[in-house]
Length: 522
Image 1: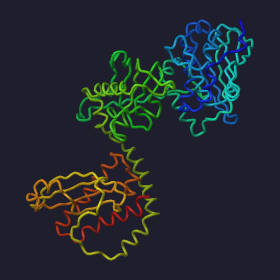
Image 2: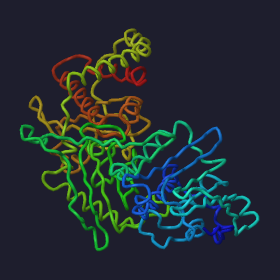
Image 3: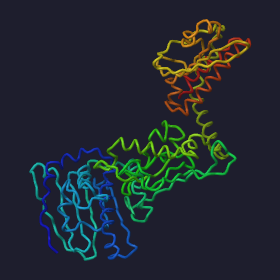
Image 4: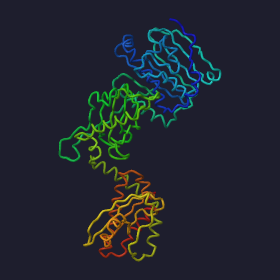
């Protein structure tokens, strides 16, 4: 077997140092090494199984050693053959066959330089008896404009094959708290190869396995007595986006139970996830609606696409217009009867006694602990204060109308016509959680001032920037809605009490504001 003593790495000399500044995430950088191993296996699968037997599996091991600040990635694929060795280690040298996962000639070099300025590649090709080793000292290469790197050649047994990449003095070394997230993303990215039995992926000697989410089986939410449906829609074969672009296979479904990090679409290309791995699921508005909605929390799926162009870091797609068309067509398909989108938003799981017990026990305990610490002083002040006489209905405090949203509705009460404004405000100058009083109804007065001259007006305002709302609702519509409904109930109860002759009906609401502001927002 002919030895290789040197390889020429031009033109990579001038760009190696710049690769450190690529916008990688750790799991996508590590994925570049896994991609190369899978690509080598798939291109040489027949030969590998002829040598090792039909039960041969690709094994890739990723090991992070924080003590030595070192990352090692080892595979048992077909290795880098003599004829490909120089090309494989040149940056931006596109492989002769680039229809697999190694397509740009950038991945291994980009990721290695992103992690480290000093890294080594050791590879033994299937059918060859030489292990070739080459080391990249990036700082030295750039400073001295080195264009040729020495290669060491060591004889090995004939049946050895595979590649090992060692990254030394890693400057993007994952910290302990990030390890779990990296494992989740790598498992998610390569789930299809793992479930097919093509790949055994190890991380620090732990075999990674993908946990398949369970699909909801339930009646359509509008007809709860009807037969249960498995809420999964398989995409029709070769679902065309436009000429040259299609979804080759995939599904979208509803989670059996809401679980953090499980919702969202995973978009595959050439067998691996490009967009939407682990807890970063792809969630276009047309399918998932607003963040925090039931659709957002419940829908998940896998879609394999063909023809889409990816970034060279393989963590996104290039053409936004194509992706928008893709999203819209998939959304239309999912909304066909029975509508998966409507079911995801409208269905409500009926909790069991066990669920209620767990939730109630935890909530009561947390609330009581907060109340014990925060309530004594404001309660003492409320009891000690003199009761104020009932004040006539007043206008609400001034609020920035550019930071408010309101709707008005009409009702008849005690033979009188009422206009009721319900307002949500995010004006930071508001100090009360709820306000009730006379409210502007300019759009009614301006339209027909005589008609609305004798109409009673009431305004109910909830302050979204109040500490209570900021802590427990923020901008989550599903949390704001019940608070607003509670505010409306309190407001109308106060009005009804006043109309029924109850004295000092606002005293109750004033105390609510005081307790929420000074104690229960903790």
